[in-house]
Image (cartoon, rainbow, N blue to C red; front, top):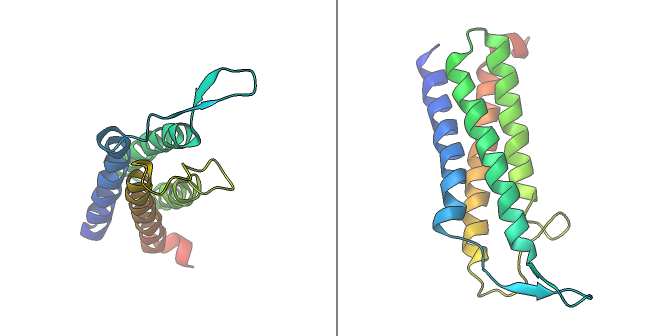
Amino acid sequence: MSRSWKITSALALIAGLALLVIPRLWPACGMMVRTASGGMVPMRCFYSFQAEFLLGLVALLVSGALFCSLGTEARGVLGFVLTLLGIIIVIIPQSWVIGICADPDAPCHMTRALTLGGGTALFLTGGILSHLNPSLAS
């Protein structure tokens, strides 16, 4: 594995780890919504960041697998998977997917900004890893 592969894989690993930690350090707001039947359920941001946590776990596993894969094709595919995970992580907090609170002062907006940064980092590192693969360039 070349030096650029190792550095980019390490950056992907750090981004995946950050996506696991961000919702725990900057949690979504704990506000509840009353349902039509009178029950209380968490707001959309709670579910959005639960999904972000699971995708961060998958990203961490995929980026860890980059260090174990020996073939350039496997690394290219794993880089492509990281790119897709980055895209999904960026679109989950959008209102047309799961979304977050409408209250601009809610703490989930800070969490959203940080997870968008982590998703963008995964997208970029996955794209770089796919681009570094010589078998995909031909």
